[in-house]
Image 1: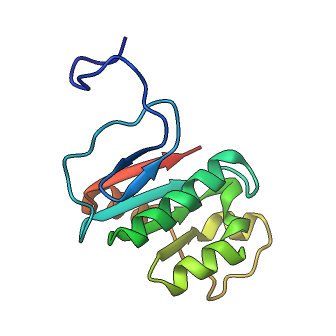
Image 2: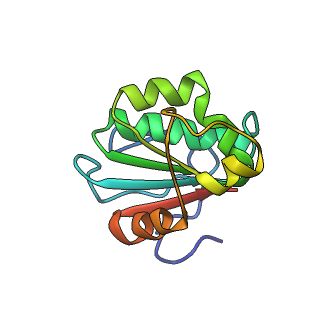
Length: 136
């Protein structure tokens, strides 16, 4: 049984909500227009994993809906910032951050594929975005 605030008992498949298509077992209605809103996304799972791909696809959908999207890759996700999908989204306006410590630990170059920063940026994203979602 869903939470009483959701207001329906049956799951919805491929429901269109505020110009975003949510494919899955349950889509929760969004009463907030995404245009001009800020979305923060934290990804900690390795590139190629389902969680990593969900984070990338959410960033793409939110950008196309008019959101300002901020993505921070930490831990196992740091090597994924150079992937073509992320770089294409960055060219479309995604603000892409990566954990500088995670890059150092993995002997990855700190270059212009992302803005390499510390956990203070994550704190700022949590505090400064309208919605913040984590993919682990």
